Length: 244
Image (spheres, rainbow, N blue to C red):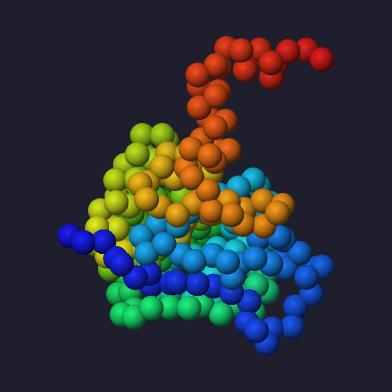
């Protein structure tokens, strides 16, 4: 089955008529200032970088601008249990392509427990495999979303999905993502997982203090540090844990 040649979401940028203060969060983040430089891959785009670099902030802004709720889930899920969102989505313009996706989901690791509670409360379990998400482990419930809820021909935004997944489950998630890509789906994923970001031909966008840059998988800090540690872990542990 052929993969998509055109993305459902092609570009996100700050509205030309938006009045923003670039000295105040989130517009003070270098990556937010350069968001218009991100052209999304029709299959998979990864946001990578250090904590605080703006990956989740940008992904959240895109999700809210597209009509998702702050906690995640489908576009029918709109509630807020705690916390706040940035104003980025109010100032974003999303460039979309036709036809529109027939399936959409925003999976957010930090608030998925709340979405699972909402699913249980509404009794809509069929789309998640027919089993309460709270009777499964965190990783199992994530996989239930990937394997049962995502139907293909879809746009899927994932914020650090590896947070709940063992390395083995990350490999299974990679396989599930590939099958969905082959079924005309587009993914935008913020991640720290070198396993996930190894997906072939994906676009990897590095977020850092200089802004955003496209990088190759083997040039990411995630790949380089993980490879170095696994190949030299006795020496690295000795260096890390030695007394001052």
